[in-house]
Image (tube, rainbow, N blue to C red; front, side, top):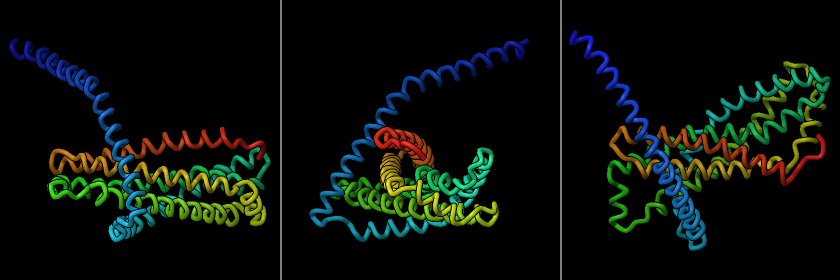
Length: 286
């Protein structure tokens, strides 16, 4: 009888704990989200201000910038190319099937160019940037925070933002722009090779439609996205690293949170920038 009575009590206790946790989460999560957003906005504003100020006063840490950019490029170039290849193949297959259904096989190059330049290349480069580079930045700064290096720098009067955040911010943006250009080129080459050699398309038609419909404005849009995506990844990763708490487990949590938050923001910003571009510069025809 005691065992039978204890079972419902344990079940009610577990349900009560779950309910209490849900209530605490709902009460604290909005405040924590506002605190995170405010901290990232403040960090971004100060970073941009220090970046331009240090460039004009020639106090920009060039050696640290080169070191970080070299490390980031070496970390993200190969994964970006390896991810761009299957993405380009999938796009070529889908648009070739669609073009065949509507009798417009000659527009395969145009569809491939528009999708790769406008959406595919910036997103692939940004996601790889967040996963490979952003995680490394968050882990580096989080480890420094746990070793109390950040506190020591502040005690000595060294600006953490100028010394650590600004060069990483600039390096992520430069590497992001380079990765977007690389992904665009790789996507074009993969789409061309797959369309011409495997789908028996016409090389001249692919190149002509690609150059006709994929304009310079589309490439400029991709570069603007790359700059915005790089800034988002840098600020989110640096903020999560500097805000690390809880020892080694806290570093792992910061890295995970940085990657997830950066990718979610990248998707939202990509939609907003694309819609704004179409509203400001509408296309009258294909």
